[in-house]
Image 1 (cartoon, rainbow, N blue to C red):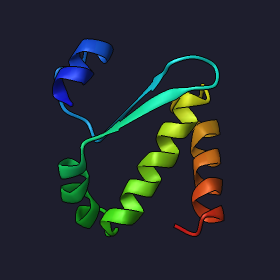
Image 2: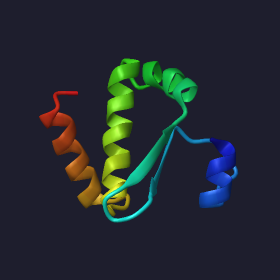
Image 3: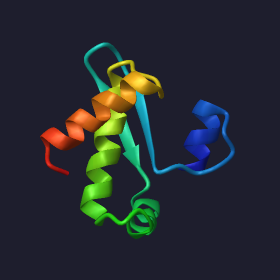
Length: 84
């Protein structure tokens, strides 16, 4: 994950999830499962809850959203609608 993050985002550190848009209708999401397992309890979440939140976060990125208020609001609505 660190290598992918450095290659594609120029960030020399690992991350829990990366999303890559392939075209307008397709993309790939890559998870660092071991990191997500470590992070979940620190956030007071189960592994499954944290994985779902990261998945929804990545999907929003694939739809073209960038970090900010609009994305945060959409993310919160999705999380609530899926009862995560």
